[in-house]
Length: 530
Picture (cartoon, rainbow, N blue to C red):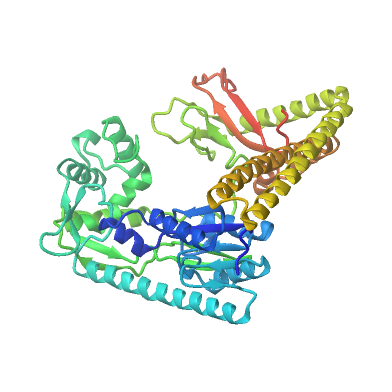
């Protein structure tokens, strides 16, 4: 028997089958399910406290934010039940996800309410029945997924295009009188693809008859005002991708980036490394590049390939320094024969930002940090901690008032339920009164949480006065004692969030103007009072 005065949630989620049904005109799934569960709530004479609508699909519950929110709320508020269209809507993930869901419902004393059956996780038989249902749901998911993957592979072997997006140079076209899609050359884009291959392998009049590298090709296309589909400029990686894509010679590559899963610190990590054992199938779409040209380009790319080593970083400003003009991260160019010093540069083609010597940028940053620390010491000496203590006491008094109001509202809500059970209130009046009171309670709870956050911030501010100076001093002291760029970078990231670099005029050969740049430094929380 369900408690009419209890707290109940509703959880809604689309499945893959629902999306297919919607595509065939069966209506919006979540709206239909919500209506069905509202009718169930009416029959059971219970009130829905909150509705969680999952609009994203994810194999694991970690990829479903509404599910994570609901589980957290179950732990904190321990509602009486959660309404769901069917048990399988809760999880089709792995055993770990299913175990987490069942444990949360069990220790939260929360029932799972479906139109077919109500499951009580604290009842031994209901628990086993629910666990078996989730197990079968997972098994069904694997079967459906395997069937889909086999279908995709079969379509690819038949030469069909299975992706929703056509590669640059082609358009996606429905096959007549059969299932599936193929590709047809895009008149303008196909010419650009052919132009890219010619630039890379032989050269063109635009390149003075000389072959160009991928970066040079990207810059040339930008200068010619040729835009890619979804960006305002060409990237080197995009050009390389075109030169390596088998689709342009009428073939399809399968398994180039297989997903790998590994567990790190108890968390499943996914990666998609390049697979050298990918399969190549003949496609039914027409090629736009001659095979001899394509394989000549691949051979040239492989000959020029230089593996990068990311075992450590060389720049202490890595991940911190950004161009103020294009907002892109800047990079360090190592010293060479033409330039005896490391240089900080913006890699965006056409950006007006001018580079500077790396050591000058680092020196300017350290000067700013030392100046900031000095100014903070002066300011903190004249700041009265008692002012913040008074603010803290006032906020506490306001918080007490809101909590007292919450107690009054809860008592009023209990009276409403009593009147309803005694049939003093009709169903309509009960719904109106309980709805109004629940709305006031919800608004009151938001105010309480807001005040509690403000109290925490004030407490942090008071504590920060005592901790900030030694913390900042320790970072700068440690920075000066180490030569390891990785260690220096980690130290800077403790106090610096990001830096915007600005310089639009070049220096002279005599060294004038080499330091005419500015740095806008944004310090990291909790040092936000700067």
